[in-house]
Image (cartoon, rainbow, N blue to C red; front, top):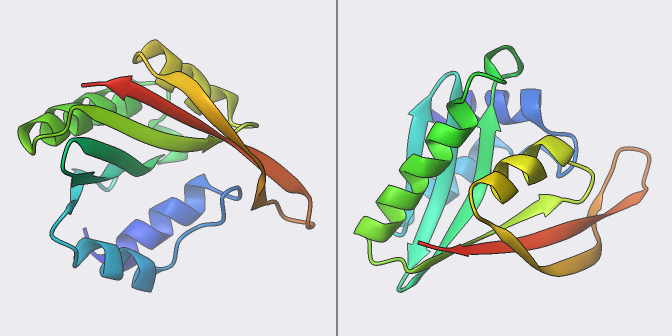
Length: 136
């Protein structure tokens, strides 16, 4: 997928955190530690640095949700991160994103921290980010 296609899908999925721009995707994908999994229906962007992996973002098109794609992408991310030497994986998620929190909890993630007022929502309100982790 092109950086433009990634940005378009990301914008269809997120207000909080704000959607990423094509240039941001392009810069991330230029890094050797970053990997992309998925297609036009959904993608996971991950990064692996030594024993620590991070889910940078996971986006599933609204019309493709509730069909197991997010879970499948997350499983693929775990497999790829482990193949790159990852032992644990981290992510952050808006405290208001109940569907994503349910997905991550079902996949074995536990909350390990909270970043108070981390994201800016439309209208200027602030939203906490949950930091979650699980062993690979």
